[in-house]
Image (cartoon, rainbow, N blue to C red; front, side, top):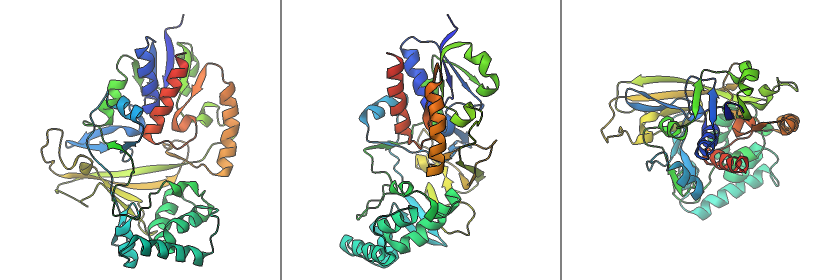
Length: 373
């Protein structure tokens, strides 16, 4: 008998759910992570009493009541709902695209007028069936909004012309013919009181956690400790990039504390012109309404400028580039993963798939159920 039933590689949400479920069912779990902290990309840390989302903003949102009930076992959530601002060369627009956006862009005041304007611009562009992100965006919101509020931001974010990006990327962007400023049209939303790190810490209670451990560097000795492996790292790295590396977009942040009460008055402002080098500025205090856990006003503010870049080995992989070429390459790795004995591949990197947080948790709960059978 080995020392552990499960070796879980990665202390992010997927790994934490597996560890929590397996530990609860009486299994012995060892969780390893190459970083020096738990919680993966949802990790948050305090700077001057302000909860800072170190790897970018994460707002929990879901319509899945089962997932909502699950996470509420480990944290209470505030009522934060995201309303983003788009800054185009000093002009400010509402995100999601809604009647506030349409009014400022075109002066229209009714949903019918806005829909007519979008349809007119779609026809002028000659788009019948959208073949790429550019055509999909123009079909959704018209040429003016695409040119000002989508094109520059998206090409900075992905490092590719919009005409070369798949259309599904933009379909997640909400478009409303109402004055609703809530970015996510989800029944349950918020951010955990005390931050995501505190929530994940509770999920990992009962499992052994070792940080600063690179699984792939110590694979043989770690595998020998457990009956089964749950791997949430990059699937191509697991197989030594034998078919070549998958492509990702990475991001970096310039974070600073400012001795002022507010910088931009909103949690997130996207900079949608090509000339501004960053994609957005995050002002972290507004995720908790400018107050600490005891309801006291937070002095000062912390901002993070976010820059997007092409991933290279040594960077953090953030967003899978799920175009035709990379999906075909992933399918080769998936064929290997499906045949790898005693190993389960899961999560955003293990499955080379963009996941929202609730989707990660739902997938991990399903996987834990099948593991427990």
